[in-house]
Length: 290
Image (tube, rainbow, N blue to C red; front, side, top):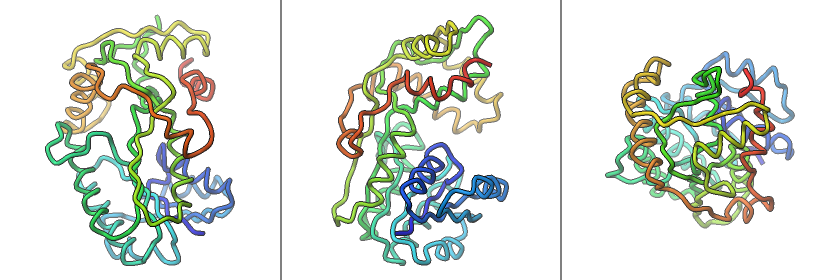
């Protein structure tokens, strides 16, 4: 079996590539930047063919599907995200692939409050109309999302975010990749829509406290305003539209506990329990001790 993986240098895509390689699956690993492809080559993973491609180029995308049996679809939150995903889906249908596994979001809908959720809904509609069997992955808040805020941690260990005391079933990206790898080998003709969660609902305060216990450092959550978050997030180089979306996600949705509640999907699909925040902290301890 040969699997096409887009976003192969990203958080989830990269883990999918490593998991498939470890399972002996041949992988065409696609990244947009030549530098990212060079890094993939340096890793020299067994059975992995790194390829640089612009997913906005429909002809280039079609060429990626030569001898491909299944595809993992994830794209960055960029202006042409929908066009990129549509190009991949159309090429997959034309090539007759057996299954597309798409990383989506919870709450994807045409009238969703988040622009990224509206984009994902439109891509899902394209996929549903394509005739290709598919699996939609709808993960909860990534534990890995906390890593982008480690530079914001004060010397005292305080981290300010606009999440309040909303609790969500945070998930480790390794579990998302594990589910994706299994679903890419799914030979059924049925479509799947999977809500993926970690093993427990966590507030930002409880997550940071547990991470601190592992890394040997006191980490405390401090509630912040949407305005303060936007100021700092924009200063980090994020686009205004994307920053507004994330601020709404944190302050308007997660703060109020929307998305709480665990599922047993990770265990049902992979055979193992989802990783805990303690497991995550053990793997990424260095990031929280800088």
